[in-house]
Length: 293
Image 1 (cartoon, rainbow, N blue to C red):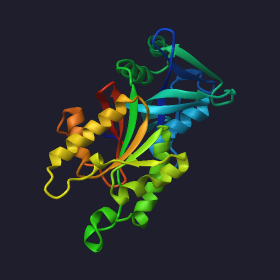
Image 2: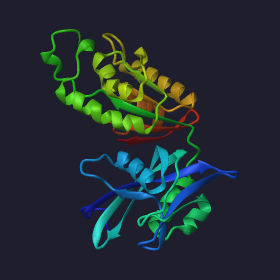
Image 3: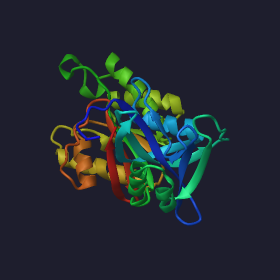
Image 4: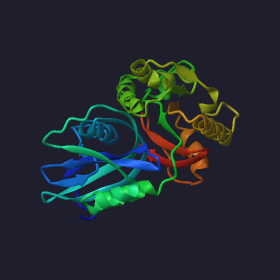
């Protein structure tokens, strides 16, 4: 299929890896219906975010609980004559249960990446695994989000830092909580604005974690230069990545683009809608990937 054909089937999955004696091993599944070896994947439920679908499908097919890290190339092909697109992420295996064979997947096996490329039955799967194998090691994963919808600034009579989420914003915050949980954060960080803290409230309740408020994620104060805030936020994100633990961070619309420009070294469009965000993967102190949610 061509890239401009309308996609009729949306699916998501992962290149799930675990440490091995030499390098890493990649998880593949055998499907008796097709007699093939492939990457774990499956169709999106109605209204489901692709990242959440990818983690869910991996768990359902392999009984592996995995943490997404870097977005990989999208596989595009025809399935039963219809254009299909499968979004993939590299995923670290965090926990594994007792796999039970069924009619959909009757075997789960782990292979070194170079062998996995040869083991899969389809060239598009081999290309995705090769893209994973070319990545440097991921040492930390951060979820960076912009605060959810908080109404119009002009209709709020108090200080702007006290402006709360509105009904739309609370719905966005609830949806974000499910995405935040996917990275299994050990800490939650927020800019000091009330709407930022509230955006992480549902995630904090879901994960039973406190929200740590830090001023270097804030928008510029009167008289403060935007570059100063962007540099402070970029430094904070780099420092968090250096700890090597997954975290979730909520900041503001005038901070996130500048911080990502400095971390990536690129002047791309990092504009982030309210309630939107980025999955950031670091290799030591270097930002390896910034993938829009």
